[in-house]
Amino acid sequence: MIDEVSELLGPVASALRLLGLQAKPSASSTSWSLTWKAALLLAVNVSVPAMAASKLWVAPAAALEELAVEVFVCVTGVAMTVKVAAFLWQQERTQRLAQLLAGCRRNFKCGRGGSGDTRGRYGRHIRRIVVLMQVMVVVPTSLWLLDPLVGGGSWARRLPMPMWVPPSLRCSPGYQILYAFQALAMITVVEASLYLDVCFVLLMLSVSAELHVLNDAVASIKAPGALRTAPYSAWNRETNLTNEGYLHSQTGAVACNSHQSTGERSETTTIITDDANGTVTDMYRALAKSIKHHQAIIRCVEELESAMSQSIFVLLFLNMMNICVHIFVTSVLLQKEVERTTMSKMLCTLPIYMYETGLYCVFGQTIIDQSEQLTASAFSGDWPEGDARMRKALLVLMLRSSRPLKLTVGKLYVLSRHTFLQILNGSYTLFNMLYQVQKNK
Image 1 (spheres, rainbow, N blue to C red):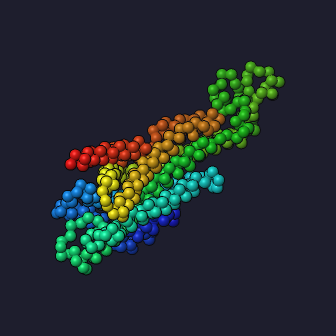
Image 2 (tube, rainbow, N blue to C red; image 1 turned 120 degrees about the vertical axis):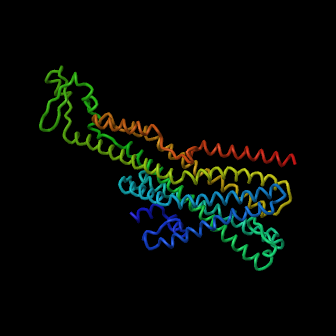
Image 3 (tube, rainbow, N blue to C red; image 1 turned 180 degrees about the vertical axis):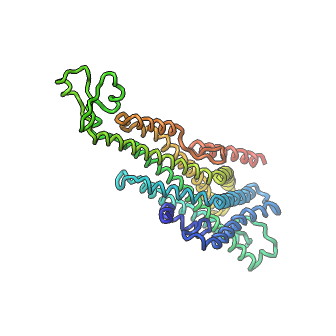
């Protein structure tokens, strides 16, 4: 099981263990090491909004755009701190979810190679997302760290992040120590936030992959050609009892029409052999296995929703504010003479928050789409060739799948494309309000 969970999480598992967000496979002996790593990471996360809050409290900027940057850093730090704290709080639940998904991979196989390698395709998609997110955060993080130096702020003793600094610490070596601490804190916080996002996205895509595998399995429940083309299928045998008689032999059941002569019967009767009856049983067993798979996926979605609910709700709400602040600051800076690095760091940071918000909403929509597809997949199979118990089981599956699985964060918002549009609309509304305030000054 440990190897299966590590295989599921892939490169994310090593990063989370390094940051103290996940226990190592050899459990007990590393609990103390995990505790102090997690405590240190949480303290570093708390320091980021604390530094920005000190600047806002003691010496807030006079210019509205500079004040907006201070608010942005404070809000971002709060969002990242909440995300780390919630992940630590729900650590056992997340580990249990990974074990459930690993169990689904072990118990419910999918075809290998070609179009059947569904989980493999999702795994490759996850690896591309990890690389893309790493590239996206490297450029803006570097610009934030180098802006005070490249932008001519070293002589003014500027720091990468806003912070109130006593005059005694502005001279060497206090300034260099603060600069190094802020650089280390920024890199640590950004990487922790990145890998938590990747972990949640990986779990969401893993659930989508299981739903995709389930859709393929249900749609592939087919009867053999001989049984499917028979004049008297299982459906006809059960619905035409008034017109049909059954003759039983050692080879199986013979279905015939009681109103036909013996010669006509020899031409129209259909022999349903023991092999065909066994095929109907196999179809029912395949459907029962798919229903168990669906029940396991439902448990996975419930666990994932509980693990994500609080942190992602706060994250999406604060990201709406961050997108608004970024657009506002960028629009104001475009009208002024500012350093290129200052403008570049704002322009490069904005896509990260839009991309992060879009990831959760789009992949949440993927779960909804795959879940909605399950009803059509169930109906597309050869259920008329099955017996009564198979049709009853199929009816239960279709009734349950008529309520699509979805992730609701904060018990208010469903992760979907519609929610993403609502967040962008809210960001634009806040930006319009700030811009009107700035314009009337």
